[in-house]
Length: 462
Image (cartoon, rainbow, N blue to C red; front, side, top):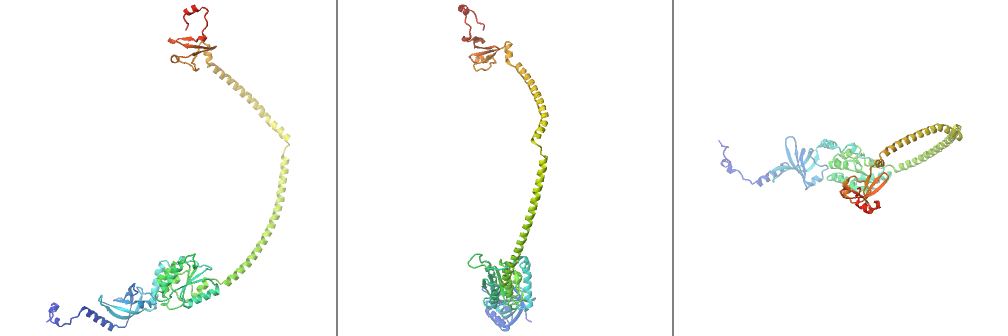
């Protein structure tokens, strides 16, 4: 019996095994894989798609049980008619190889196609629902197309029949300036160029050397779903929805529908139909203008005739109204003149009306004067009773200083050694104050003595 639990170095056949280096093992595995799976078709769902800055695509193909790493080199990616995204079911043709640097195997994709139109339609429907949920297809976002644009911007291939059809149809209907922005309409990079063209037209200044178009037309001829896939890319749909310039999508034939049709302001079934919607027929406009001019002349003539007739009617009504007005005015004046009285009669009437008032006013005036005379006499008697002259008549006198101010106390006389005036009811007397409260007559007021000696020995009354 062999002890399998023994270490490998102790295994009886360990020394007979061939020894390989790591590089040899990786090389042999690589050769075996490439020889066994040299050219295969693999169907699976894209997962973890990542576009490297070098242009190579790294992703994985998976089904319900397994995952297979895959790489698509830049040259193959540029030839694809669609952009690989997660969730797409595809068929990749290539070879299985290993990557020794990470000890893993992978599928090198040499061609890639969507696994049937049903899968592509499912991807398209899922994207449509997602963008619609964001409101990019909402009706309220759509702008009104101009009736007659001054210039039209066309985004299409410069070498296809589409641009020739557009220019030819414009010459037939209404020639005007056309600005062409050449782009790829299918293949790698087409979606980015179309989106850049839409945004580029919107960035043209309103006033500049190049006229900014008033309308954009994104056009392409018919083709398969894969050929038209660039117009289903999210970058194109968002650029169309964000455009400030009204946009018409004319991609494919009448039965073809792309996502840019939902984001544009108007969808044309063909590029020719887009031109027919963009501009009117100039000849039809001329005919319409002539018809409107003729109708305007007839309408103006009829309006003038009606105005003349209305003016005549108003003149007649005015004359009638004027006659009626002056007749009424004359009758009113006649009635007023009949009611007027002669000035003499008015004066007599006024005199009769005024006489009672005059008599009453005289009586009231006499009574008023009598009352006031009596009241004045009473006030005069009261004033006389309060007069200081009556007090002076009863033997009193008043004292005034040199400033003719009343002196009311003895203290004022001591303070002021000045001439005082005594007021009596029959005159005034000037005196001088002396010591001990006495008064003496001023020398000019003293009586002259007939006997001076006797007079000098006699005392003064004061």
